[in-house]
Image (tube, rainbow, N blue to C red):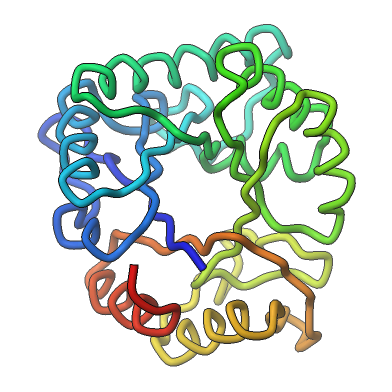
Length: 244
């Protein structure tokens, strides 16, 4: 089981995340592309850091929402949304080329990610954007019960997928993430996080908010690199899933 982490989310003088500490423990770095966080220099430093630790690089495009950190939904026409996504991926591709490396996959961020997993019309727009730009890119999507429908849609665009689960998020019974504004939406207890990761990696299931067991077949697990105890959490998760 691979570990992925959102990174490069600082902006100018504003620091965010523990990228230098976390990077050695993850397999995949989802690098912000400037629309919800990051800036060209931050992107460049994060790419260099990922290359140093042999971490696979992914673009982490978002709605154009710096103030809301990309977590506010936006009503954007499909053609405009495609351009927004392609612009961000292209920017990271250029920086990667300058560093002698490349973008391997795309994982949308925040509200865009949640919306596309609830609205397959938006998901199809995202797939079109990625395919038109570079159909060798892999799209990272949430492992949801409708995975076969997602696979069928991706097949139309000859697009490879990685399915993702979350180490520290509470799930609804229908296999989505509970809203962050809801109490206990994000697990804070290390033992609970470790238990969820272990169950995901060994059994392909997790426990939902109502106590039901939900089947979740994932290729990668998202860990978070921000917060006071992020490093300890990531180290414990790494020990559960094994060495890189």
